[in-house]
Amino acid sequence: MTAGDVYRALWRHKVFIAVLTAAFVTATWYATKQQTQTYEASALVRAQERGRKAGDAAQALQASVTLAQSYAKMIDSGALDGQTRELLAGKVRNLSGVEVSADPVQDLDLLTIRARSNNARSATIVANATPSALKAFIRNSGSQSEHAVTVDTTPSSPVSRHLALNVALALMLGLIFNGALALVLELVRDRLPEPDELGRAVGHPVLATIPTMRLHGAAPVASGGGTTQAFDSYGNEEASPTSGSRLGSEP
Image (cartoon, rainbow, N blue to C red; front, top):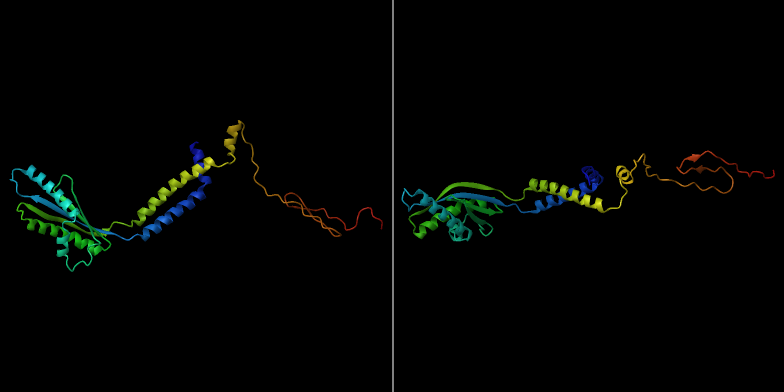
């Protein structure tokens, strides 16, 4: 199958492709609109290990990187949920709907704390309170060398229900999938070949094609006297009136 054959096959099934693609886009739009909006706020925290000598900068950085990884695992495990609830007593009614996670920044003494919730305000408050809960945990542990410093905070923003992106992806994938489906149907269907395909098959060029015509039968002749009308095979009236008397009859 050449590129021209593919183009002609897709063009023959353009309505089929357009209808199915429109159904894909509509279904994606409806499913996306039904989703609950989720918001995410984040805080960037630096972990510092100050117990090393000033000249051991490389060792101090490695110790801080390890410390950031430990803090991230601690937050992911929920070990700071109690301290966070104490700090937010009366500020957030329901903390069970807020998901808190943390990821260390590779090869740096930084970790990113994220809070997700269906409520934008709750996500922002929890993301800002978690570093404070981490600092309280470090103070209560009695460590004199560990420190956590909040570098930056990001207010909550939507992270789900990307309507425009989902619709664009549905449109692109729908066109690809439905185009491939149309080509499969073209291969399995039983149809007459195109004129150029037929010419190549029989080895002779096709000079002309006869279009499909709807033919009408002749109208029935009325019994008795009167003028009758006849029609040809194309439905055109023939001018052949007949007399009401019989030919050759006696007067």
